Image (tube, rainbow, N blue to C red; front, side, top):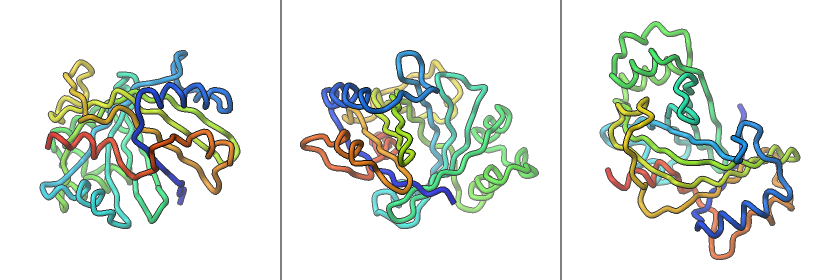
Length: 224
């Protein structure tokens, strides 16, 4: 089980500029980022009619989980199914690659198409779509600037331009219209394994803010 610590903070555009300069001096850019140091992420979150994932998030239920599909930089040839579990103050993420055909079947709710899958995570999602009523629900787009630091396997990200789309079937449409997800300007995320080096702890301190469990999915649900 790969459990990691994770902390988040809602920050301002000016905080982003300050942190970008500060982190660039002590951390490396993620090699998967573009030459400009960032990439685009689109995620599709699954929810049921009783808003199980959202309610568990707001109530601080422990443990809790949520499913999502995502892709990067408008490239729908590489689709990732993820299950994210929160256990006390730790986070576990399980991933599996999906084909476009599998993704379209999930979007349409065509579960018989997927019943014979040999992919365990996809099989678990299909089962929970059958018995818990999970369905594709909310799209979230954002731009991510990632920084990495080897000691502690630290990853710090600055997420900006957080946008949402309520029509889940538009997930694979890279030209789909998206709107701002409320009034959240940016989110700072800090993730690490066993320890967080003091130099990073000091670098991510932002006066007037505090670490929280606030999520982009939570922000996107402002519209329903």
